Length: 154
Image 1 (tube, rainbow, N blue to C red):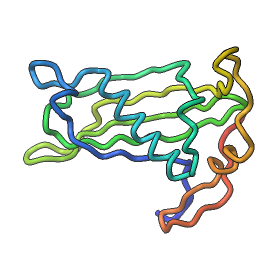
Image 2: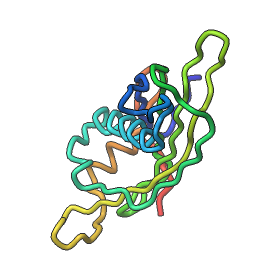
Image 3: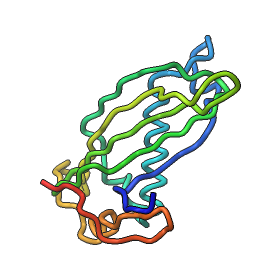
């Protein structure tokens, strides 16, 4: 596949003991951390290091499809699906890696919305900076090339 894609970030890790309950099955909150780690990878790749300080989550939805257990390898992928004036919508999936006798399996999927809130005193949203919009609008090809993107806007 050589065509461009929407901006995305990937995070690979293992389910650690801290991610689980006493039975060794992941807490539902672990999915949030895995997705946000993939989002952080995207923002680092695009040079948007100050993003998290001004982008609180305003909506979050997840569907849990399969358990993850202590020690399993996982991959979380986040994709920017909509860039609004002062909000962004991300889609995400968390996958358990294939292992002996078990194929790769999706454990969770969902979406969330962040808002640009640069002024913590007022808590009002504001338009995303134009440089951030440009950084996020570049599509990435599998060969590493980037080109301007047409992320759906509102």
